[in-house]
Amino acid sequence: MIIHDLITDTPTLADLCERLAQHDFVCVDTEFMRENTYFPELCLIQIGNEDEAAAIDPLAEGLDLKPLWDLLCDNEDVLKVFHAGGQDVEIVYNFTGRTPHPIFDTQIAMMAISQSEQIGYANLVESWLGLTIDKGARFTDWSRRPLTERQIEYAIGDVTHLAKIFPRILKKLIKTGRGAWLDAEMEKLADPANYANDADLAWQRIRSPGRNPAVLGRLKALAAWREDEARRKNIPRGRIMRDETLADIASHPPKKQPDLAKVRGLSNAWHDNDIGKRLMKVLDEAEPLPKDEMPDKPKRGAPLGKEGALVGDLLKLLLKIRARDIDVAARLLTRTEEMEALAAGVRNLPILEGWRYEVFGKDALDLVEGKLAFAVQNGRLKMTHVDDVADDMAAPAEAPDETPREPAGDTAEVAE
Image (cartoon, rainbow, N blue to C red; front, side, top):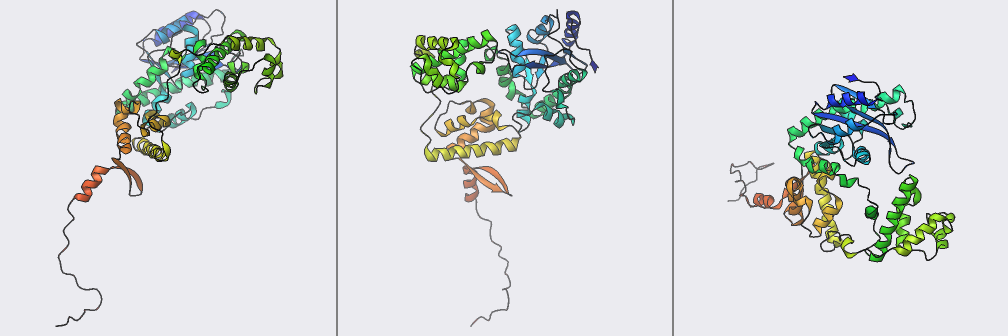
């Protein structure tokens, strides 16, 4: 494999992207800093395939990243491979308003061929290639220039290793026939709607304090205000105010600005500073949340109660058994809240559709309806259909052996 020097000029980048565009896939990774800024600060981009790889310096003066964005977002013939790529995709979206497509995430793929739910990259490399990654450069300041040779070598390794692992994962997915299981998950990862930071929708990421329209209206207004403040100052939104503090103010709004000093999570300075004045203005102008914006009620049937909770526990046990038996991550099959809804009588659930129904949902529904039981066979917990057990019990017993047997011990004397 050819490892190029750090790319800092547009012609070299354009030539690299033109060559990579001739292949079926390209592996991508980024290094960024986001501890002190609203948007993550892109510091390095690594890209490559089985033939060549390079690191690109987005901070290099005069470098135009357009050839890279065109390859990632417009070329539908090249599959873009990431590992745990959510934040990488977010960065591309922040620069371009587009997302890489088509896309493949090896962390998600591992859920379909193993019981690993969120396998880290170091563990992935160790399990597939038997290599131990040097983690020393992982937490360095990627924004500092010049980058050291050790940093660049570490960073490029993220795509060179992935270029060897991806074909093996793909081969196993094809062999198991589980590639289709991941289609929806990959499309979800590439959906631009996941990365559009609409301030008016920011409140939906915060745990809603009930369903009171007035409270939710204040929550929406405060969340949008916080987004605008954080963007303007280019700092993380949590530096303005934590989610729980924002939700608390929405539920129990202070009457006057000096009361802000009594709010847990805010400093005493809020009682008379400018940001406190802006917050109070937002509260004063907040309107109740319109009916058409109210969040959907959770999918629930009848209250679970004690018996229903027991059924929920049985479903969790069933999930563990099925995940173990077919070697798949339980999280890919379903989530706890979905099983609880099934136990409570809800039937319009993803678990009862498509491949999830065939792999797990059908048995889960049978368990809820009393058609499935558990049994221990050879010391291993198994699922058993009640009808099968009944058939076994109804089968005619094996005819007894009619061969005469000698009495045990001394022969007894029979009276005439």
